Image (cartoon, rainbow, N blue to C red; front, top):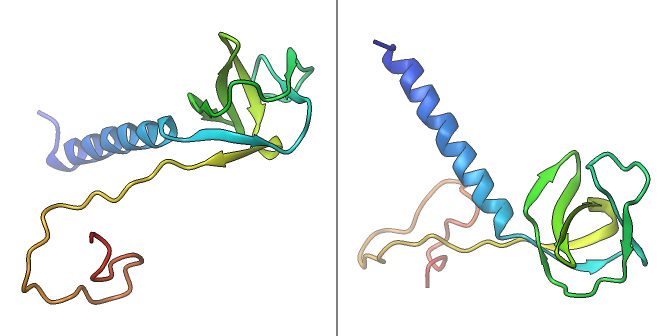
Length: 118
């Protein structure tokens, strides 16, 4: 039987993997810093496989590796250099029910103000 601490570590790693994968899926490329944009077959910055003028934007980010984003352009998967594009990060507050009469949060937690979920 595994030790409780190793089981907790494994569960925490699995949860981190799931949350980080979900965060990337909500991101999208919304603009180009370089035109035409080089599209790469691998996230290594080698010779471009194709180029794009940005048609069909926004492009959802499918994966991130080595400072490159994997996107689908014209039905094919390519990698783009993160320095060549502008990205919109998908984020949303995960607020539960607001309970009245609870004192405001204290400490220095960023974004923990009393108006965060209103």
